[in-house]
Image 1 (spheres, rainbow, N blue to C red):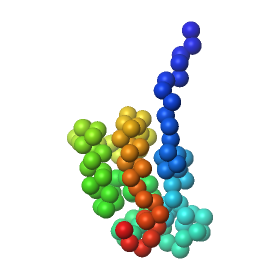
Image 2: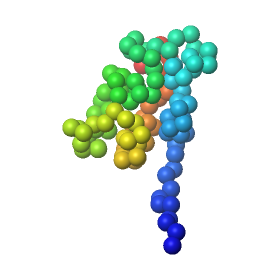
Image 3: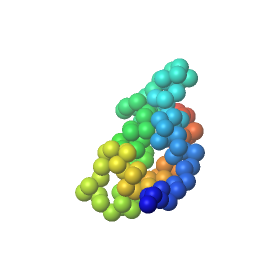
Image 4: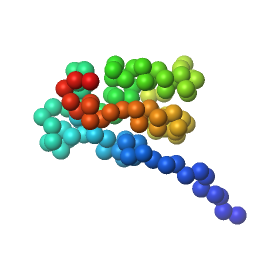
Length: 108
């Protein structure tokens, strides 16, 4: 007897970019000499997906919505693979709410 593969996950363009490491962040573009600087517009860290997901202050309200929807604020995990696998739907909504083009500009 074969195992069925389970429900198919439809990936948005943004989520696919995040999952394969090709999200349109300043750090990613800097790696390919397409930007002069990898720093986030907040000035603190390189603008990586991990920074945007877990530390970027301007995403804190959306992050809190994600935490609330997960309903396990005390168990908030900082490993995106674990976050994605356990909470696909709310994680997808969080990713789709990110305006990557705007993050590449000097202000948000």
